[in-house]
Length: 56
Image 1 (cartoon, rainbow, N blue to C red):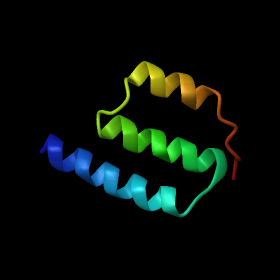
Image 2 (cartoon, rainbow, N blue to C red; image 1 turned 135 degrees about the horizontal axis):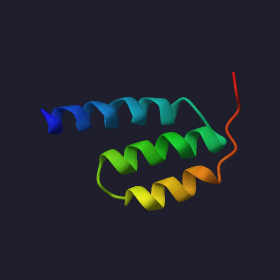
Image 3 (tube, rainbow, N blue to C red; image 1 turned 90 degrees about the vertical axis):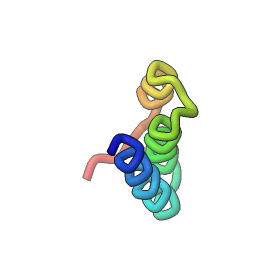
């Protein structure tokens, strides 16, 4: 079940990354990298804190 959950997160993140740009694109990419196990949570957190995301 965990594998299916992470696969779905990666699929959604990939689609959102393709639909965005700038810091939003980077943030969604961080979600993908985290779900894929490519990045350590502390590194993702550090990069995420540097982003300037628009508020809707």
